[in-house]
Length: 79
Image (cartoon, rainbow, N blue to C red; front, side, top):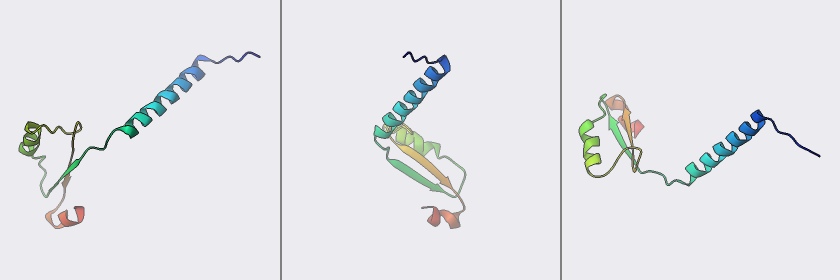
């Protein structure tokens, strides 16, 4: 018995295998520490991120920085 597979089926199978491999690799990566910045304003605090970078911390590489903005009366709930 001979089984033939079309180009589309082969590409779909390879794509599915690649996607599963990428998910497995991502699941094995250690979680980054998170620095949360609560703010009542709209600034991303460039001096703060620059200071972290000077200390060797880069957003997305070895730390995750999350800026949470809202009204001052909502900051406690956001924390």
